[in-house]
Image 1 (tube, rainbow, N blue to C red):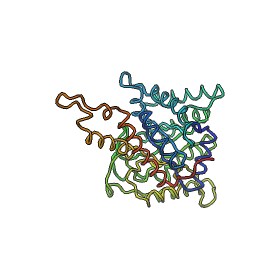
Image 2 (cartoon, rainbow, N blue to C red):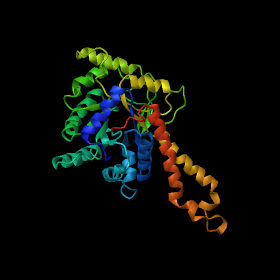
Image 3 (cartoon, rainbow, N blue to C red):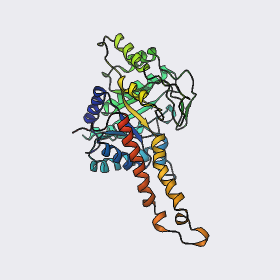
Image 4 (cartoon, one colour):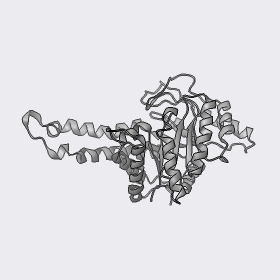
Length: 343
């Protein structure tokens, strides 16, 4: 199938919410990692989300000028063509974008999609993320209101991060401390500013101890049960039925999470979980293995000519794609999305 239409993406999220599963959102930085993600989804018979961070887009733009918009648009256009060969539905998303990069990333991409929609086409991306977690909540939500209106007009879903996720992601750093937990008051202020769907659909990255990057068990205290409190607090305030879940949550900084933590998050409204650190390693590990095992072939040692079959990028690239695809299928299993693709 092709890249998800706005309607198909909305259906994907609705089905995940109702079925208590979530889609892996896989960060990609090349056509090769894109194919690895698509392959993993197809082999798991799961729909999914492919996303590009500001750093990933800059890398995709080439090291000559490092243009983020060029990189993101180029890979998105490529994805629209090659995704049609995979028997799953995939949404394209842009990951963390802080305030100082909005004018160089999300706003131009919103304009690209608005122009496409005006011509009767679908948007280039299906969702964009505004990461205002480094700002005050008031400023964060004010910018969120502006972006949500623009996104809705372009048939795009906005993702917002209202409170900090620990660790470092593309230059945005937050300490790992007790501030990494969203409060019910934070959720109520978000609902008041952004609505509950009537102003445009959005995904909410709330904080429950999440940390980006690599960490060992015990270094971070995740409290996914907190998400239930946020759902309940907003439901009560807005007269929603008991047990309803007004928010579509996103799980950031999930590398190393336990099966129990993931399951609790899914039960409380998580429909998207980001994966980057684990898939990076899964892609690179087979390459390292190949280089170590074929040291004298990939290098022209002692004046020899090496072995073209071992240093040909296609040789080790195939192993890298396969390794990352396996990790994506594992993520689908962990998030219960295996076998749930749109028919």
